[in-house]
Length: 362
Image (cartoon, rainbow, N blue to C red):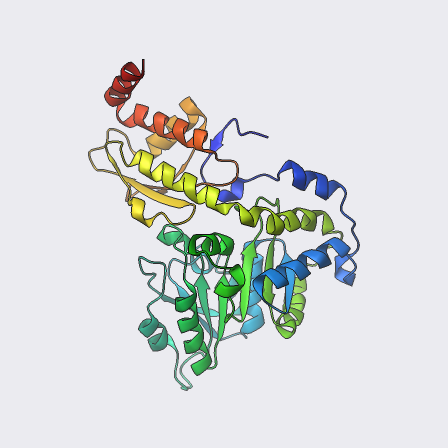
């Protein structure tokens, strides 16, 4: 399969590979609510092994994975410490507060994707009747708001130590955990060895059509199973979905460096175009942010619209006030797609320079 439209809006736009579609068509299935779906059970076992945890649980979405984890760790009226730019806080519809009565205590996310350790310590509530009990610290790896920055083992260990000292739990939103592992040259299990729970998305850069996996201790997963059911996540013949997820884990996790390479190719390419500001050195995984300068001849909205209408290229403005755009590379984006995109952007932002390049090439 090839993409006639170059879709750089997110790695959530990935469609299943032909191998996945064939596996889905032929997957042995059973009733998962009864624990009888063999393909789903295999996916959960392999995910737990890859993540170094005792058990794992398949959920329909990353949001449900994070919510299930938070509600398993926290009771109503508890508080969790989380980054102000974390997906859990910004993009999950206040679900922890809505369904669990869990209050977020937000901290600034640093340029490297981390939360400041001293600020984490200061955010932990004392034993006071006026305060909600602090129960949980949440990290995001990679941190999407910080150019997809990968959080290293040493940092996660430092946060885990704080959690142990204060008798808290640590959850890692690892939607792109395998991207972090690839960028850092470590196994995914090393990144979450000291976390109490982790969620991993199968339907972003790993190409599965649906689903995430959460992992932790057997006791945690036992409790999480009940929470998932209460949220409507008890599925039946879900092995059809799990069959694609198995290929995500076995195959797609091993090729993510290609996506990181095309991300850097894109950043380096647009870095040569007038009116674009991009920090190439921050591109570590598959996420790139760039800004148009105030004197640019078109706005990010106009750039996005013309790329779509004139070149069949999709990218979405991220912050109109800052004139910024977020771009994500993925399995279906190849080097030739990046070349085509950079050429199209140059033609819109620097038409005279684009003409000179064509004449020179001729």
